[in-house]
Each structure stands twice: as C-alpha cells, then as structure tokens.
Length: 484
RNA sequence: GGUGAAGUGGCCGAGUGGCUAGGCAGAGGUCUGCAAAACCUCGUACAGCGGUUCGAAUCCGCUCUUCACCUCCA
Image 1: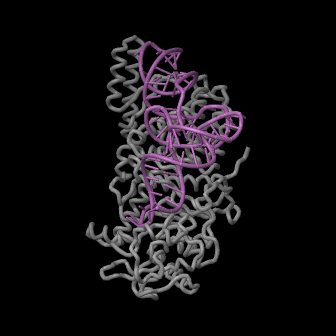
Image 2: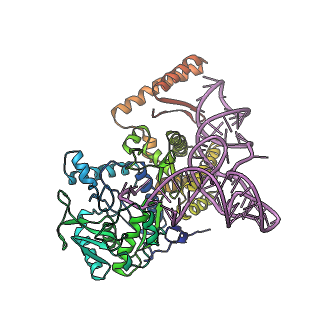
Image 3: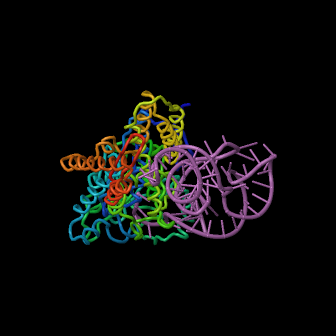
C-alpha cells in the first residue's frame, strides 16, 4: 500500500506526482520574512507548513536542500516607485540604523521559529549579502534584451517575455491596467514593466554602486539571484504565501526564465492566510497577533498544533477559543504518550500497519496534516483502549512508541520529548518538591485508607489551587503541574 | 472592473459521486469513596435553486454571501 508524494502545483492548478529533478535530492526555496518587525501568526503558519513539507520529504529519504532568504533590504512602503524603504523607516522610528533593525528582527524571527520547532533552513541568505549576484542578473537580462535602463533605473520588459503572468492568471496586461491602482510611470515602456534596479533618491541609506549609478535592487530580484546561486537554475519547489503569487512570483519567473531560458520552478506551493474574523492578518492591517505575546498565553507547540490542524492551502481563522480547543486536544496527545511510556507490559496488540498506511497516505496527499492528526487521534483512542484493558505486549508497545516518535514527533513536531514529559524539572528545587509531594500524598493515602475523604479531598483541592493536579489511576496516584 | 479561492453539524476543521474524518463543547453510560483521566454510545452537517445520475455535500448551471490578489505583506 505504498503511495507516492503528490503536491498541488499552483502553476498547473492540479496535484502532481513529485519527482525531483535529480533523483534523491529535492531543492526547496521558500520566501523568507522582511525583517522590520516581530513575527506574527501568519509567519508561523507559513514556516510551520513548509517545515512539515521539508520534514516529510526527509522522512521519505530525500536529501532536501532548503534555502530560505532573509529580506534585509527594505522594499518600499507604497508601490514600486513611491514611499519609503520599510527598514529605513523602522530605523528612523527606533532611532537607529537599518542594519541594526535587520539584525535585531532576524534574531527575533529565529527565536520565535525555534520555539515553534521550525528547523532552520540549510542556507539562509540575505539580500544585502548578494548584491553582486543581483547586479549580475540584471546585466544578463539587459544583454539578452529583456531589460532596459532609464535614468538610473532598470526595468524588466514584460513584452520581451512570453507568458508573463502565467502563475497568477494575469496574462492580459491591458485588462490588468484598466482597473489597476498603480499610476503609470513615464520612464517605463509598459505600465506592467517592473523594476530590477532602482536609483537611490536623496536620503536613501541602503544603496550600492552599480553600472547604473548608486541604487538598490528591485523587490523581486533577490529570490531569483539567491535561488539560482544555491540551488541551480531550475529548482524543484518554491514556496511562499498566496499573496505573493502576483506580482512577486510572476516577476521571479519572468526574470529568471528570461535570463536562463530554462524553467525556473517545477512545483510552486502557496500557503493560505491566517485570518482574524475572516479578514487577512497582515502587518499593514493592524490586526496581527504577535507570536511573542501569543507564547505568553499558549505553549508554542500548541500554536504549531493549531496551525497543522488545518491544511496549508486553507485559510486559518484565529480566535482564542479555537486555540484553546486545540490545546485540550494537544494535551490529550501528550498525556497518552506519557502514559504509554510509563505503562506496564501486558499482552494486548494493535494493528500498527493500518495506522502506518493511513498516515503515510495522508501526508503523501499534498501534506494533509489535518488528516494525519486525525489518524493520530484514532491511534490514541485505540491505544488508550488497549492500555485500559491491561496493556500492550512488548513488541506492540515498542512499535506504538516508534509510531508517535516518528509521526507526532519527527514529522509533525507536535509532541514533547520524552525528557520533557517524564523528567519534569531538574535541580535542587525540583528534588525538594518531589520530597514534599511524597509526604503529602502519603498523608492523603492514609486518610483515604481511613475513609477520611474530607481530609484527602482537601489535600487534593488545595494542591489543585496551586496548579498541581492529583489523579487516582489504576496504576496508582500520579501528579502533574498544570500550566495556568 | 480583472484574476483566483471559498461557503460543511454549537465551535474549529478534513473529505469530494455510494462506505465513520478528527478535535473541542454537549448528553447518557462503564470505572472510581468522590473527582479527574480513559473508554463506550449519541448528535440524522454539507449556502440557496435547478440539472446530470440508479445514487450528489461531492459533477454541471444559475443565484446569494465571504475572502485573497491587482500597492509592501507569510
């Protein structure tokens, strides 16, 4: 029952069997953040989703080369030709310089991603670190007749590239302009032409020398230049947010394919948005939920779990109530895993092969994490049932642990480690707590033996008030600290 | 105006021609001194109107509603 990996390709708008260009190796490029503010839930959805994509492909035995850029050149706050550099603006607001802004928010980004269990990309190139590569790409486009210079600016000539707009379906440039909101620029040949290189106006801080004078790269250029540098002229997968299909990804395709004459990307993947009350969460709107604030209330892994309970191509509506519902389910999963690890040996068995097949099929079907999670819950239910009835035999118990380690842990990343679940806290204060708890539970045990339930319940209630939950199970009394 | 999505039970959220999604919440039960946990049972959902079909939430058409993109945005 082996299925193969199918990926929904935004370019063909169908699911296609994934076959890497070079057998055994998958090249993946995902648009990274522009670092001028703390990451929000929308970033989390995107990078958690692609994290699972990469983890699953590695699980399948592919060697994945994963590149994710850091955009540290602030593109403009308005349209391509107006407004202020975003990073420069933030630097002005924070009374510092652009480089410090970029570095500070880059660190902040990785801090948040680490807490979400997002594995770091193999290469995380910055736009400012690849200015020569970008200039070279512009020169190549001028040489091949796909770009032209005009007063220190260099534009891509959309008419010189057949198929511009094929990703977004925006192929009729005339119709596009009719209702468009971007004012025409006199120095462009065609209103749809986009900037490859921009002349630095007075006061612009982030600028570099180029054959066309002092300036800075256009907003689509870095991804093409860095993707080609590290992954080759044709890559397997390019991922990003849906809002980047047009113009960003269409422009990337145009400038890359015009330069190389080769297909740029074989599978385009676009993840959907996080919404709040049905409206997109975005930096420019003021409705975004900062991850650091969210982590004050919720375990980062709960957020990860919440994200993966919906499909990456579906919008995900944010609400505290929805995350709380996820939290309860998440805790149930952790509890069951812990119970499995501590369970005594019995004689029960489970049909592990069926659970293997189901979850593999789900993940092979365009990374269907919600279905994968539902399979894990079916498994959890069967597992708890078996443990209720006296436990699993040694082999099944081992396979059950492997199952959760592999799918909930290694692939989906929604399971806490054994150490975290079993060891609790370490150190002097934890040992003291253990000793004190042992005394209290001994007193409670004596009270219960004497049928003095008033006393035993009082001990339990008072502990619960302080965040320590005591449960009487078949295996004996257990206690755990609950997060408030 | 153009380009693309989507409307599923109290809530979140999969599926997509016949066969249980799953989670949360709720009801009943088993277990327990009681709780908690776990397990068992239950809820007759697929925006509306037509059509295709032996059979449609799933395909087609129309209508209504929502969202994204067309300006930076994961």
